[in-house]
Length: 314
Ligand SMILES: [Cu+2]
Picture 1 (spheres, rainbow, N blue to C red):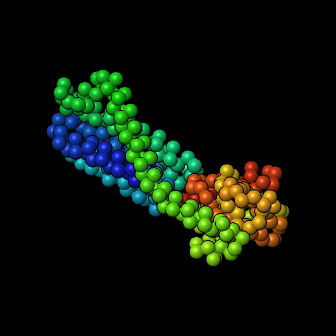
Picture 2: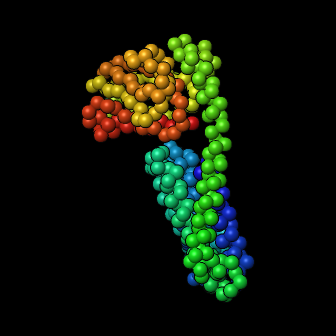
Picture 3: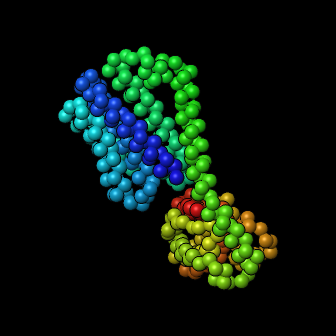
């Protein structure tokens, strides 16, 4: 959801700058136009690239091309009313920003993605404001202009930024709440399932998802996977290595679908399964909480050697 919201904000602000440049093109010098095209190309490229890098995570080729294309378009459109030099400036920095953004999005661990998007948005909004101010100065100082008024008064500027991020957070939470509606429904369905927790999960109505996790020295395959709240999961740990391995999910709440040693009914049990070399072992559970959780091998030294991955539950 933050991807869509950030995408919309970035698009609106960029169109504002492009429209401004187009309307005042006769008053903007080549230098200022080049600066604007370069800055907008780079900013849109970086932010857009980051978003598509996260959205198409796992396909760096596609996200790089798409990110570079977004930056290219922004740089081109901004430079177009000014000069060929401004176009070149905008296009080159747009492509560079897009490529870097896509790589950043691809490499960012899932747990830091939202924070990274927020940081990028703060940079984007701040820089766009400065560019608009610079253009306003360039095209003749106008005492009545709202932008000038805001920038000549630090208090107004602070209020403007606070209002913007307050509105952003509000929208963000609103969208996140909409996302939670189906989650609530499925956890209601889930409590019916867990009353019957020793019966076959196939009888409970929800389709069982089977995940085969291969463990070797020292890696898991797949390294990342997705689960759905309320949907029963059979996790099969296939140890293809020479030594024993296990898998444990950090801080993930789940309801186990088999009699646990402790015999408790809690939905807050740790999902842990262990497998000897060349053997497979399985565990069945129902995820009850959304989020991104880390899993790792608890055998000493294995986590540090790379036996770590992430599961995304939605
Ligand atoms: Cu291990």
